[in-house]
Amino acid sequence: MNFKYKAILAFNTLFIIFTPAQQLKNGNFTEKIDSININYTVKGDGPVMLIGHPNSGKTGYELTLQPLEKQFTMVYYDSRGTGKSDAPNKIEDYNIQNSVIEIEELRKS
Image (cartoon, rainbow, N blue to C red; front, side, top):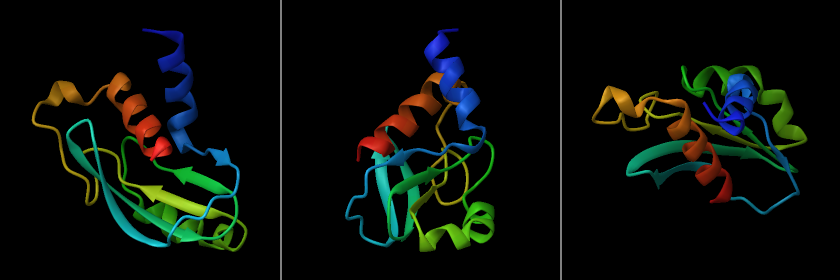
């Protein structure tokens, strides 16, 4: 397994990315990534913090991290097969490489 994928997976346990402040619209959205619809919610204002987990949905994070919305633009996302995001057609599509692609493409968008 590539070191890059291992490093990103380790960081993905509670995946947080700080980026310069952007003007993101608050609301619930869907982004097609790797031919799968990924659901995410944007709340708050300030530097962007991307929150998700490959084994659980975003609801728990939305409830527990709500105080951070006063200082950050929180982007909570449901990874493939969780919450309102689509599930892949094959079980083999649940893997580290696809998780990295999903996170990176969501970050870019």
